[in-house]
Image (cartoon, rainbow, N blue to C red; front, top):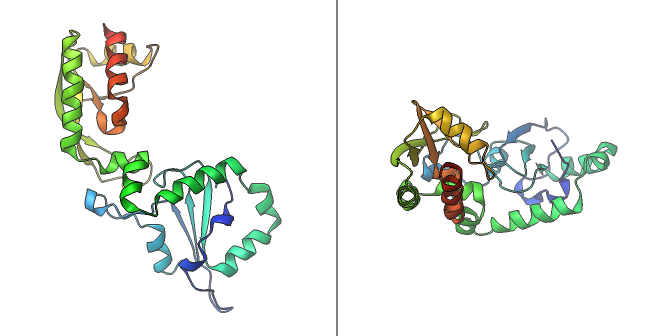
Length: 228
């Protein structure tokens, strides 16, 4: 854990344990708070799921799928959280006020599920419909072709990355730059404004699912400048 943020524990998530209970720690890791099965991503439990399944405390990241600053979060039963707070090690591991402020602002977005899916970048990328990605690819392709860059649009499988949903690809679309893939990668990575894509089946691809929509114009400009 990169930080100890027991001050944001949610006491109402589980009842106080009796003295005879055996504490169970669930290292959730991802910090997932919203069920993403409707987007084809199932199998990763949410923090609520972990507690409902009997975990006494749940450890998770404040970043990753939760979408906040890099931090560690511990939620669970009140008596155990109180013990953790009193441990001298907690003082050495606590995060600073800026991290707490950023984490609080992120968690407040979760009060409305739709707002969280729209405003938290990681969730917005995962929830974006494939058709919307394709439309964005078409707009960027038109700009690139107008600048004399040969490209096309292809179907793509996007992935969440890290340890969450390792075997769950997301249908997406990518811009394929039609030139030597290795040369393209070198040129774009070494540009003043680097552009990072991937090579698949000998082609250089830019999957716009991993690019915020507001950056589409800047992406096109960077490619044109690097390859023009």
